[in-house]
Image 1 (cartoon, rainbow, N blue to C red):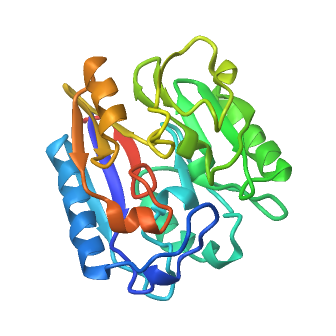
Image 2: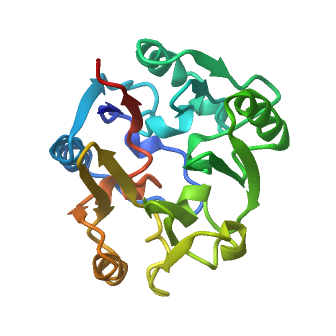
Length: 262
């Protein structure tokens, strides 16, 4: 099984990114680009075939490719991001994904950010955020139900996306901030709670490429990192400080898809 990771180089306009829950700080663009390159290398080291799209310098947030598409085994759903400034980012991502998946689309008035979508097997959780609306949920459910996915809308608070609050770090094991999302929404899963003074620590990127499995994770949350390692999770810790200033995280910067080997 081959695991493809689609990433995009960092925009020269990153400093002008959309922000909702973090204060604007100066971003060191060259450092951010080096950190992003190290992120792509971590993907490759964990067994991914990395496909790198060129930067879109007119689109500040375009490095965060996760928000413009959600990829499943059968199809890819092109989203309609909640921030109007981001709605043109998807065209080149769609062109890249079309080589691997049939494409479906969320249409107006629906909005959906990929960062609000957490897939756990055939269960798909969607966060009710400022970026994803009821029309988007309804369209998403209609598009996915023919493939046997069950879409469940989850209430959240005080963060940008659902995956700011909860991500999967192993089969049936979630990393979660219970102050930002209700743990009861994920009944049936085991959970590792983030450290109380590391509220942004719930975003981790699980990579399962054949016999290789691990998690890519920011190195700035040492208490939560220790909890994952104590649970037996193999963690690759990286510095992503400049993209975090743009309200980014490790899941935001790639789209993962499995390809059956022929």
